[in-house]
Image (cartoon, rainbow, N blue to C red; front, side, top):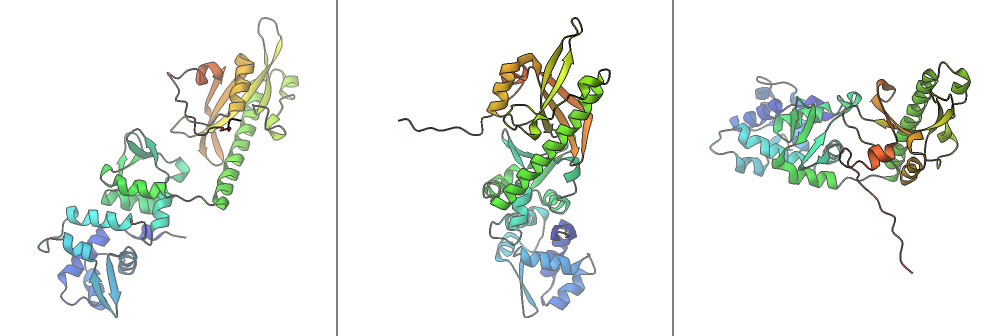
Length: 317
């Protein structure tokens, strides 16, 4: 279903406001006639403006939101006056588009003093309507060099409120969890194929690669593969933990059990960081393999940020 935001842009909303201010008699018929001379999509624009409480229509007569009236001085309509009003209306927690606005804004994550959003390739068009309008009116800024979206500091108090109000129903949580599990499973299968090619010269070992995560989720690793020592020809186990990561940011969750297992096996334990291009494709050419991640990652705070997002609490006896 097409979002209302995909039918709207700032120019249309501004044209509607200018049309309203130019008319003495604000009947729906006269507004539509005047608006259509200067802009497009009257029905969609008028409906959107009504839903965000920019105007009210009763018995074919249209009135303007008092907040807009008090903002515009001497009937001189400027972007400086209009855009803050649109921002306040769109970020209203009681507004008609509250849920859709909140859903988009919750993709932004705090990074230092800013909130940023770096969409994956497959998500770039998902919110294009609301994203483009928010950029036009100044709620969102885009950094073309870094390919990142930022929330404007001016409206951060309003956008933060929407982000913090996010509600995750048990049903949505279940769906998100299932999607992550499915993505992780496909990443593991991709690495198994990678390992088979790596051990191509020893098909006997390749055939013994074991997908441990399929039947033991507490093992502390996903795949059991093998290495052949060059000097001694001795076969060693390679314990592989697979993490599917974003194409723009290297971050992942690593459980206490996985960390303890990495500590136990040290140089025989490997982290495979596999970049996700979209839900069905991985970039195997950008695969990052980290040997002894307990030392190289967990004990290397100069290169990695370790963020504990939950704690195990036990009451003392």
